[in-house]
Image (cartoon, rainbow, N blue to C red; front, side, top):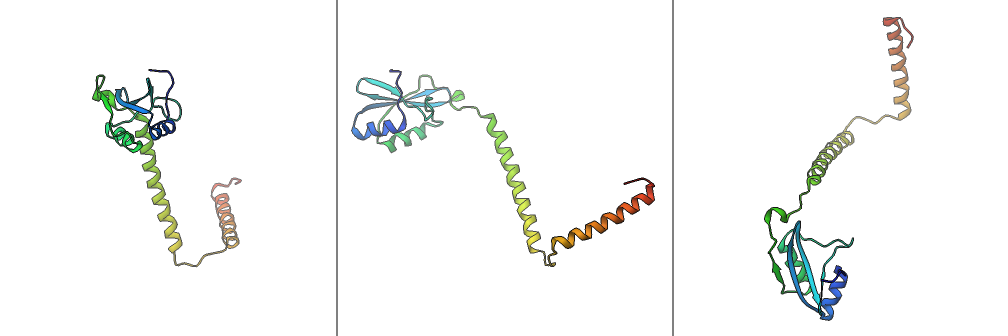
Length: 152
């Protein structure tokens, strides 16, 4: 196999031009890879970042290749091990837990906002609210001085 890899865009162009002679799907640790033969050269299919493109399921590879115009391909299961076929993603559990918490908080928060919007009581200008709190604070400070006899 040549060191030169092939990406999706290039593979699509090669299929369109009729240059692809064969495709072979091979089992690898973490999923299924694709080897494409053009002329006498076999090249692995790579993802955008240059790493070998792995598909989690054989069915996904079949749909992908058929969509490109490669309805026939060989499947190599010599190294197939169901335990190694799927990549472990412990980080996903943590991310999903975080997403669920965020969704629950968002639902709660939106509910609280809706309650406030639906409140039939008339709204009050900020200046009036601020003035009330200034008076309330003064009363509390006076009360605290009387009870504790200390500066506040």
